[in-house]
Image (cartoon, rainbow, N blue to C red; front, side, top):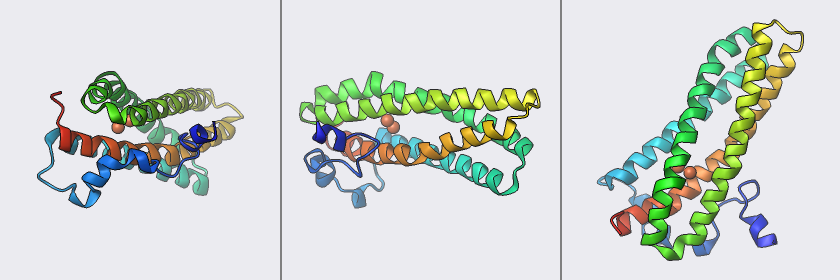
Length: 188
Ligand SMILES: [Fe+2]
Ligand SMILES: [Fe+2]
C-alpha cells in the first residue's frame, strides 16, 4: 500500500525508476525536431495547459494583492471555463483512445498507464470542484452577495492547489508517452 501511496499524484515527485525505461532510451535532451507529429502535438498541448494554469495563477495572485473581485470575475471565469473544457477533453482522448492503444503496443508499460489513468481520475475530481467553486463565485458576483470574497478565496485556493498535481501529471505523462510514440510508433 505504501508503494501505491508513493505513486499517487498527491505525493510522488516523479515516476518510479522502473517506469522510466522508455525515457532513458529516448531522453528529454533528444526531444527536439524532427519529433513524431503526434508527440510534438502532445507536447504543444501540455505547454498550453501549463501556460493556462500559470495565467490563472497570475489572476489569483493579482486578486490577492488588489482585492478587485470584479476584475477577477471578468478575467478568471472565461479562462476557467476554457481550461476545464480543454483539459477534460484532452484527458478523455488520452484515457479513451491513446492509452488503450499504448497498452497494446507496449504491454510492459501497463502499470505506468494505470498510474496516468488514476491521475486523470484525481484531476477530474479537482476540475469538478473548480467548476462548482467557479459557479458559486459567479453567482455571488451576480447577486452581489455579502460572502463574495469568501467565494473568490475558495476558488482561488482551488486553482492554486491544482498547479502542483497538474504539472506533475503533465511531466510524468510526457516521460512515458513521448518516447513510446517516438520509439514504437502508434500503429501496433
Ligand atoms: Fe493526461
Ligand atoms: Fe496529457
